[in-house]
Image (cartoon, rainbow, N blue to C red; front, side, top):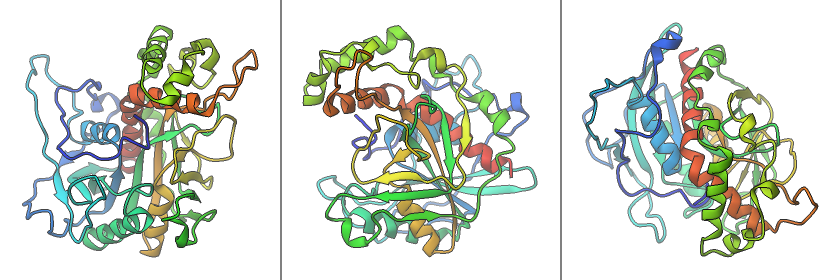
Length: 370
């Protein structure tokens, strides 16, 4: 599974008990987000009003969003219950996703976040519409347009997993930017004329609370140890895809670099990339060398483009769920692209939920700090 394939969920996300850590909001002098009760009128009804809309995409991202914004408070030791939290479907005027079953657009919930000066109402949405899947760029643009029309939101967030754009971006770090560049290959998206173009918001959120919020981040060194990474690699080698087979000649030492070295994963950080675009592609893109991008992902430039057309501010908060993968081993042996992609996918599959936790905390901090 990868950022490209982990995109469609047809059932409510399972929450408590979670493998993610409880969040001690009081430890940083903060208040947990407060769920807002609402009268649900069905999937074809308009969305409720909100100050901010926050999109996320994959199942890992959705689970982390649910945990941080709805269920992350410290639980009593006696807590043993299991909850299936039923998000509300929104599919007003939505097409059917080709070969995916059911209608797009997605699922939502509503929360209030206490800021420095006032409360902000945030509509959380798990989107089932994507740039790289039917109905392509037009579908995703229509989703943003419809959501803005219903909610009257003034700001849009897109949060979730991303590929590292440089060795300085370690597993579990978070990149925050207000800019995205299109990299399109699919014939369905080329008529848009957006390939190679960059979109940028004139607005950028407050980062004043991030130093405190980072104290709540999950250090990936707790999970991605040398032994655990070796186990992930062996498991990937036993897969049935071509890339898994291509991985078999390589050891962990061949694939490990500073972005994934457990010694560098004990203090994840959120970094401002204001004015630096992330790279939005309609194909699974991972890099083997440092780039000039904030991160590598598969939706945000479209979200920004549609938001700008609607005169709405936007920001992207992306957690590094799969790091830069080397093209050669330390002994200069070439690592085939299929093997690199298989390794990248294995990293996402095993750690994407935990990196998404950090991204959701960072997104919360930029709202609570305003």
